[in-house]
Image (cartoon, rainbow, N blue to C red; front, side, top):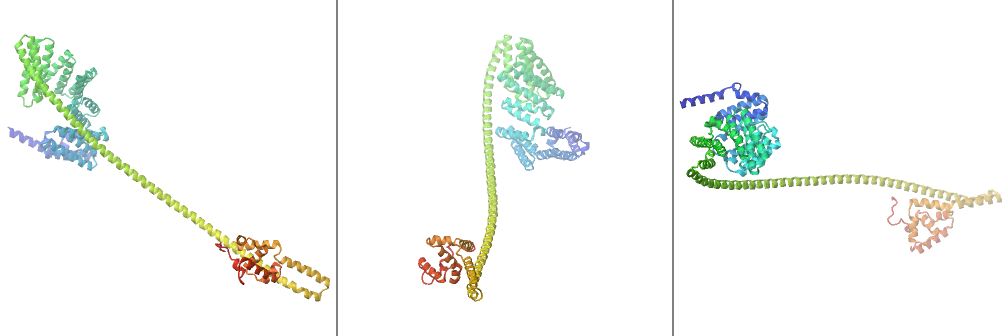
Length: 612
């Protein structure tokens, strides 16, 4: 029989593998769904389908078909998730949580290299989950929180299955009794599309459990009211999905809340619903022995002893039946149930005056209470130690991240400084080039101005020389005229009467006076023209020889022009002997020896150039 069933299953799996996508209802559903819903459908299927976990060939074939759907619908996100699922299929063969954590970290690193931050964050989340299952809580929260931060940076709304990741992180915080963070994360998770029906129920149920735990610590009535609303919401969600088992679980949790508030009537009504559902569906999971015990405790408080005895007995019967069930959870047979049972039994037998049995249960209760307290204290100490380790690990990670941020900041600052320095040098270089160019332009303008000025000076000097030459030539002409006039009286004396000769003599003398440099006007004109050709000549003479007379200055000026004695005598209107005597006295006066020409003395002043 077993072989026949196995053969049928193998044929079914093979048939599913070879069926085309169009004949597979799941693939048709994926194709019809919205892009976000497609991802959730595929992830749910790979979480819950046993064929996927047990037959890798089937899983790979199905993923290829889903990838084809992604190509057909142009859904790149679906194709990325298919690659992620294909890369993480070895998790079904790995026998250790540490191995699976390493697998997801490797796949996440590959996703980062491919610039796929969403899949990288998903991989880091699951690596954290496997570290948590392995008891490495520090590493677990390091990766879980890093993944959650990455989800936030990408945007929660862009992660189709974000409600699942937020719930799993919140549930890990619940293990460490950090109820405020549990509530916050689950509130955020409830705003997004549900990942699965079961997770939708558990989100509200776990939030209610966190409010209930906080109510036990603070006795805040507001927390009790919030817990009640969340339990009712979870039960309503379970009823909508037709999940009777979760209807019973949430009703039982609600009954426990009523009991803590001492609302016995409401608690009893909820417990009866939970008990009936537990008897109906509990054989597949767990029978309601704890619910029966809670009903017995309420009847004991109401002094309904017969009902108390009945449910007390039923509780123990169901407890033993659960022990015989291999699927029965270990937590349902731990000492907490027995402690509650001993407590109710002790009260009941005391109420019915069966004191020996009451004392017996009282002794058992004390022994078990001591053991439970010891275990509780050990567990609390272990939790505290684990929390300290988590905090230490997180501090180390934060310190490392701060150092990295500081290094990056220093790198950025250094880069910024170098950039500013480079910009400064570049600016200075440009300013220097601009300054050099401006200086070059200024120098060029100055050079042009100097050249122009020099050319004008040269032209002016040349014109002065021409003017002086013309002036001297004019004097030469006057010299010729004077010689002619001087010779005329002899001829006139033979040809003209005496009175006419006298008139011509007077006229000739006047011309001689006019042709000489004796007049101030002629001298000034000569001096002006002379200084244009030889600027600073007279000033230099005065500086060197302060006692020179005006006549001596004139003589030196004419000597400068290389005019001979005869010409000087005629130009100055004095005899040549007077010129010679004056030159002789000047040589002695000025310290010149022998027949040294006066032109040597009247050379250009030091540092003077005719071209200047």
